[in-house]
Length: 99
Image 1 (cartoon, rainbow, N blue to C red):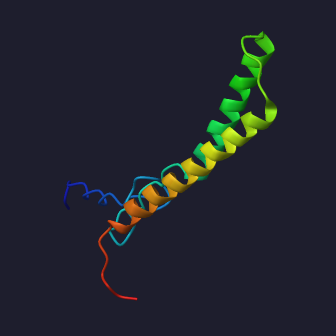
Image 2: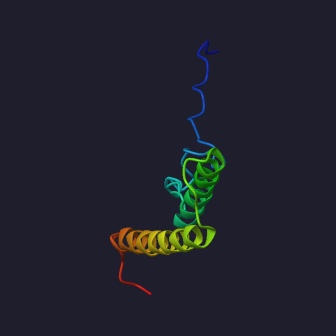
């Protein structure tokens, strides 16, 4: 009769917990960054809120048509630039050249 205790089982990470590894030993997918469209629309809402506050305080008088045109030009430019930067970052990843 032996008085030794059996060795504990080796640690097996839970595949459903973020940051743990799967049973195959590969790590989980990297977290995705913020989407360009979400950031641009958030900036538009913040800009409109700031312009409304400035107009209500009487600091400046704003023409609604010019404000909307400026916001649309800025939002369009931000979406195009953000999309190009996102596509450029995505193209830098190594590929296996398999379809």
